[in-house]
View (tube, rainbow, N blue to C red):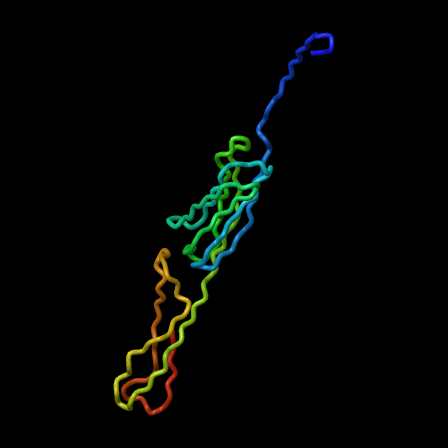
Length: 173
């Protein structure tokens, strides 16, 4: 309305299109049995969807998700028990009406956990049978895994019931 009381109407057409978006994720590395934090960045920053992270060998696939906050989504996987190796990780943005579904691939590498095995020293009297041998194992993880986390080992010695009096060397295998 102008000062004279005349009103004018103008129509405009606004075309709304889906925003062009990208999702990026970095390769990650985790030691067997440890916690893995994965993340992705979504651009533009106004995303409101969920990011799903999926990786692992067949039969042992890990799937976690995290909501996008700002432009970042993170998720935590406790105790990764996938066999040592590298696996493709699919990272997918879902449930975002403005951006649609997006997907990218990164790599998760599972590295060996350190384990040490030390034979406990034993002695015996000449002519007696060898004692039952034991070892101290450090680094065994609690939890699952495809084949469990038990470590199998054998203790051997060259000493026999009739061995000469001497020091024998034991081997841990």
